[in-house]
Length: 332
Image (tube, rainbow, N blue to C red; front, top):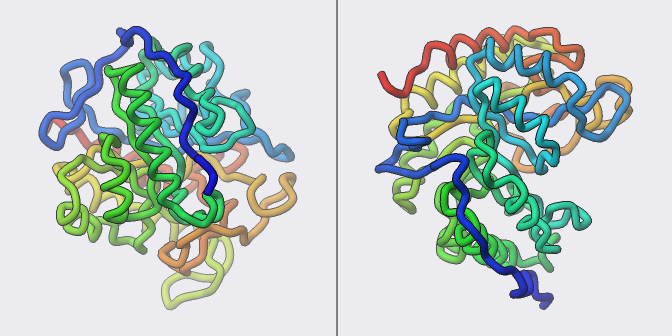
């Protein structure tokens, strides 16, 4: 078996002073104030392209603020202090995700993730360090044994906490973590979960309480705006109403139970035309693990998940998210 743990060449250095994030009970505390992540997943790729860029950031930030969003989650680090500054100036926090193998670009297998942390750990926009994204569905990346990933998570979590004790380390797991995941990666301080259980996300709370007393958040949840088949209520084809109806129920369940979670990240901000075919047009289909829980057709049409479309036109669900987030106050 290959050794998936990092070489012990990393030297730990000074602590961060940019932000103080901790857990008290089941609450997230940021700079001594309760904080609930009213979040959105954010990976902006322009029409006709396949790589992330931030040329629409100013417009996107205005839309996010209008929707009451206070945190974004990104799937790869943002190596641009001007971009991070814009998030901070807009009052929006960032959960930075590290992938396992990103060809040496601030990833885990090369150890270069630590270079990013050392470079940006004093930046006040960064809220949390997050490891992976539902890698438990991809054991083939780890010689067929997902425990290799959990061992790497544990090792890296210890390194990050030694380097930056002012923030938390999490992982975005596909649905409920297994007992092996919790046992092996015991240094993960909070657990993110990508939860697609139709429009019933609250069903995970009792299951989580039975296996862990650590805080959890919804790293992904929501619905897309394309129906692969017709139902008694929704017509086949693009159907923004189906997405809006599902997200309204989902967010209500999550926010009503805010004492059982520390945040939610709706997937996602903008439609991703790069995901399922020709990046110059919006395609149906695509592949997503564990997607049979996607409301209301059991199929994740990967290019239709935005709360705005590729041109930043608001979908019906934008106002659903806005109503839920703007009216929610963790202090009340």
